[in-house]
Image: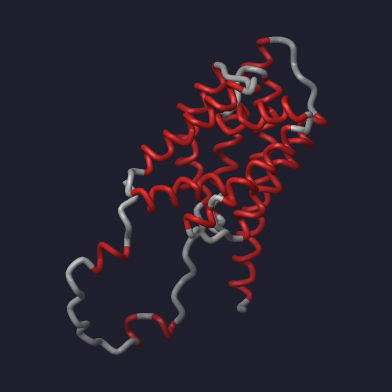
Length: 232
């Protein structure tokens, strides 16, 4: 591996693990704000309350269970997938152990806003590293491919089911849940652009000037469509 390739790999690994750790921190801070959690954390909290385990441990167990659902969907996990299951839950528990819960609403509101922005930044970091999707994202894309339904519909059905189950188990739903649902998508898109890794420059052997010019045979009708699946 070249020096530039090694440097790029190191940066991707740094982005992955910093992003996952910050994601866990953001989830812990949102819980400390006490104004409502993200849908999957509502479920994590509900399971934790009924089992006596920590919410971070519940997150790890549920993440591992979701990962098992990849098997019939024929999804392949990557380093980022497995790391997602472990690191976020551990970072969340560590944050809860170090951070006291504020009592004043004037402290809880900005803490909630900061947690949502931090979550979006963390999402941009670890997704841009491109080491594989998290278990929940892989479940969404796997169901999309198997059912032919749009990503929007599949994601909405998953999130509503998770939120309803978590709420029934006693998870916290509130203004923070609504804020997260409305803000996380646009904010994450901003940070995905900010943290996107540039493609490595082509080597001289790969430049057009050194590649013989040939006329490619026409591709079969629909070949291009199979190269890029419809994700809408």
